[in-house]
Length: 250
Length: 67
Image (cartoon, rainbow over all chains, first blue to last red; front, side):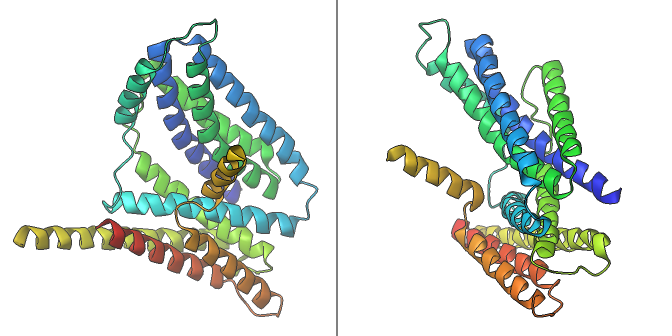
């Protein structure tokens, strides 16, 4: 029960963050060049992502569980560490925060300067929307497949992702603009901690580890990863402050 | 050929990311964990420790280069 809640939470947050970024791309193109071809692109990418989940999800259930956990754990760990590393660097001031408003403005400018459509389908809008949704959604698709197949909860994983996407799109329609107030880096930080923790836990089980306390160990792993990440962020901020002070004195 | 290279680069970026040392470190950590666990040694501590060290090392490198 507890791990299902954590699983739902992890997939929901990861999907929400990627959906916010995809929404910005789609809105930028759609508002400048029209919605018809843009929505074709969104639809085509959604079909491809759905096909990946439908094809790979059940197929993975025939792989022995230890091998599956090792592979999925390693993959989640790799994704999680990439998210966490960037989130820590952003929170520490060593990477600029992702700015949805700026991404929206630059997306609109690019869409406006691209060649005008001559046929029935505007291939620029189609391609940008297709690529945006596919690339942002691909990682989520793998996370959904990984979580769903390892825990035999593919339905729950798909439901969590769908709920997040529906929520983001609904808010996007109401706001009628990019969701710039969403604390993206905080969400990425949390998702990074969760993916990394599940990756350690399942990858470890797949490699033959017996966790003290069995499934409860995931909470300990998550706590440890969160503590290390928070400590690292604080140290980065202190280092940056020291450097700024030294520069000001010089 | 150009598409094959682009396809390979996409998957490299997707799975490995910005710092290949982290991915290489994870492979080593998994192999060590597997070997220890299959020799009856309690190896549950190895992956969390390796992840912490890899994260700290990667972030420190990036901070040094970016400062």
